[in-house]
Image (cartoon, rainbow, N blue to C red; front, side, top):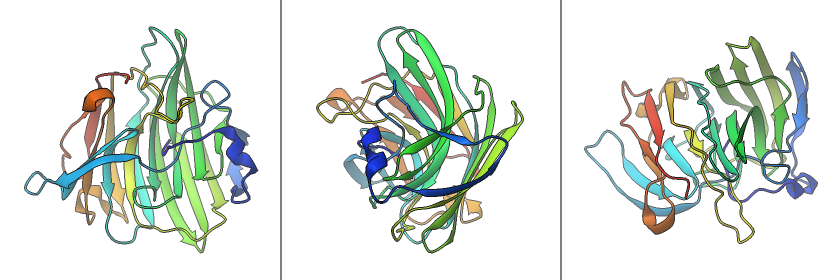
Length: 266
């Protein structure tokens, strides 16, 4: 989701891997994401930051792996949003894109998140839904995900290092509520709704961003209020080679709604 800098499945061996208990229609399956090598999730990789007062948000940032909006100042215990799963256009090579909500990861080394993704394996798109307690491994759900599916998702801090992660595909009529343990004290320092190009290539770079066309996040909230009311609200723009934007992020409408449009894969 989502988070993501850099994640290989070897992270499953870390002692901080999440301990899970699930109440859902079907059990979560260990995520083999990204062709069996990569999985979504991880902190933002910032490459630039600047003030943007007067433009509806506190600041703007450039990242190699995230785009969207985040509350970055204060304490955050809940985040939620909805979106419609976009279709992937897979023309060449392997490419990846994830869409998620989460806590932490902007100024901390952990991320608690859940979302969906489209991965291009050659010319074939693959769709999944997942959750992750980074630096633990991501876990894919076995449920069917198709383009056009409507998702509702939320992440909430319960107590200590315990979290509840909820995701529902209201089109396919399935949902999951997971209680997960991070294994360390969470920062609770940010809340975000994000489009992500995951990490990593063999040299540690960000993987190519799949052509997802357009995706809209709606009803984005942090701590039960519109995300636009969050302290330190930051618009994050994903950039690639030569600093060119990989997608275009709209303004935040009614404090809760924005869209992203794919531009480039690298």
